[in-house]
Image (cartoon, rainbow, N blue to C red; front, side):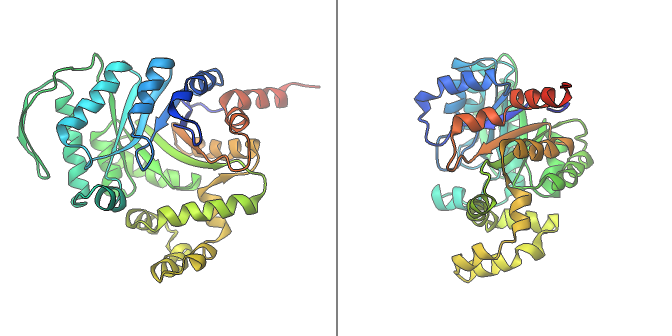
Length: 336
């Protein structure tokens, strides 16, 4: 499918209870998926699905994209990361990020402030804590006194940073093992990767969560995509990200309507081109070609987030897989 050797998908799947994922994990491995990436928003926590995957399909690589830097204290964060790393030696990558005011403040009642410094401090603390070093340290955004991790993993996990704009992207390049991108187009990837490299991160892993609506009716896909876009891109961090990417003029009418409380007008104001840039949609073969563009432009670990509206999830997961891409390429190259 590409020169990249990793190809991931987001778990858990919507509509499938966690206890029923064992067969799904086996199927993913058989289809050529190398990675499963969880998230931590309003569904499962980021770690439990990965613990199940580690137990049921230990050959899969695991990642969480992302865990907020605020919603666990530093010591508990280190324990959570170390536990998955201990359960899946050499297979786990931890994604850390600022998250959003909605998740941190509105849902968890915590102050959402000093985002850059909080993420940086948490990353630096984890680097040290995961080695088993005893830590008494005053960071800019928190203080730790006398903590030592009692169960140090055999292999230290990679630590990635979720990053949107230059400051955090460069921090990922300088101090993390890779960067995690979200809500950007295939053509936006080089601009983000350039900032990671500017921070000294040339050659580091670049993960992207890529939203996929495998529906062949573009009107249906765009309707769903518009709802997703209004849910995310009205969050300040994502709005500023898209202004930086140059998408401000296209999205300003949506932002204005949303701020005025006119949700219907906000949806209608999103141009088709923006939906088509940010949401992969169409037949599974068209979706694979679009995903390939992300990989060609610098994504080393795609983490597909499949929205299986009106289609069979199993068929879609198979149709988007590396094995399907290989079969299609073989069919094209084989003479009649």
